Image (tube, rainbow, N blue to C red; front, side):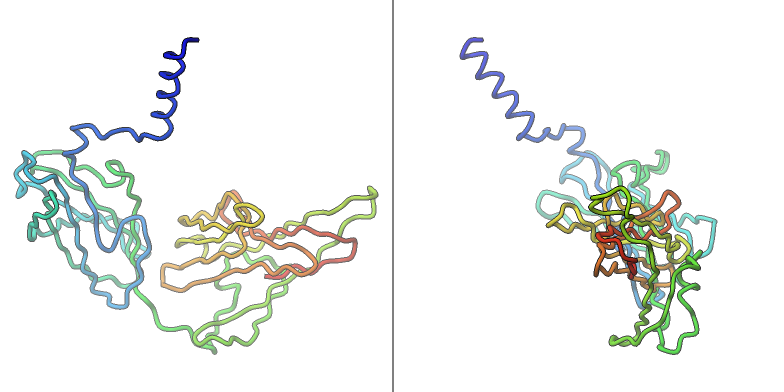
Amino acid sequence: MSAENHETKDENVFQAVFIPKQQSAADAIKPFLCTYPPLDQVTQLKDPKVNFTAVVELPAGADTASTQYEVALWHASYGGQEWTETTMAHGKEVLAHGKLRIFYTLTLEVSKSVTFTAKLRNSPSAAWIWAKDYQGSQDGLVIIDGPPIRGDDPASLRDLVHGLNAALQCVEVMSECPRTRVWDVKTTVQGVPDEPKDLPSAYADVPLGMPWGGRGRWFALVRHWTPWISPRQGDSLFNPSEDAVLCSFVSLEGKHLVLLGVSNDSVTVLRGSETGEVNIHARLTNTKKHILKC
């Protein structure tokens, strides 16, 4: 291979790895849609009167009549199966930093929570474009804070974790944090078997249940690698790709359920199942019986 060909090959590799694909002229004039409360996130608010704002961003001087752009909010309330479409009101237009931003507003009364997405079109006769299909933005979720949790709340852990494993010992313990309840959850499992000899460790999996019946969103801190912790999040199906050290589940009523694996003579983590249930997973290091806790 000549030196010239070798240099050309190196340049192609460098361009493929380090130089991002340039935006085409057609992509540069496409509108960008964003909202507040934001899409693809959970937003908790105190006021049930929720003011939605959408912004359509265009390059300044785009060959488009801005007043023709329409934005609609598509939403479904807590417990409801029917989605409703509501057109947002056209508001002010702001020209700044080479961008034209067109604002749209809408106010909704939300009882407990509302799931929503948005769509837009550039004329009354044009087809609607969904934010999910157009720019990959998933549904947003707004949750209105319910009454604070009381220490004498009669709800048990079985009311919060659907299908709670009957083999688990669940004891409520004193909480040192206001408006918070704490349970000690544990079970006993057999340790490393005597046979075969020299077996360094064994593993145990104990089903826990499904927090909030699988409705809501979850967040987890996972062991990305032995010394590293990374965040993960998802919708109703709890399925992190790595072992989780801590998991938090938010209900559609604004309550949070946090699970923490406790390691003593075993390494305890949390895993998901195909159905979205939480499993307690432990690595056992000796032959005696182990108590798994979370």
